[in-house]
Image (cartoon, rainbow, N blue to C red; front, side, top):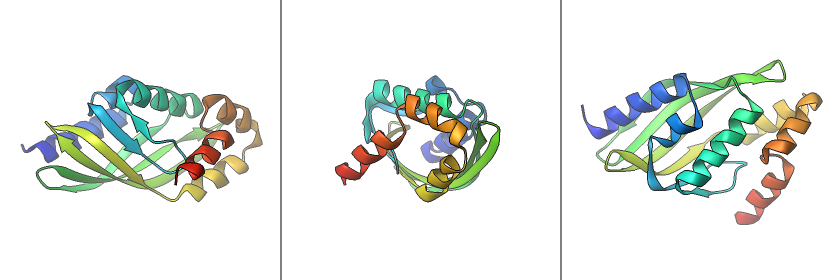
Length: 148
């Protein structure tokens, strides 16, 4: 199996039963992660912290890979994330583009419509406190907009 195929299979396994450590194990120590609504993250420690914040927000989040495509050093993975937000189901489709180095993701750029998440949070006021405490809430969004 090639590195892209191994990476895609490992990605699918990690998101089927995700933990911050399982997700970080897919990444190169010098990884750079870019995604809508989140600050750009560099390195294992920051990545683990961001994944932990996500799981604080949605402890039951899971991912299901739909398809992938890749070359020797780039992999595109289309998948669906789903979970509940204070008992309200939420699901959104993403495409992550990974650059690989030594079989690990050294850069990930995630593509999805952030308005789906903003709308989901707006409809669940009881989740606003959890969003704020996670560090992924409005202050993070303002910082993310300023980075552009």
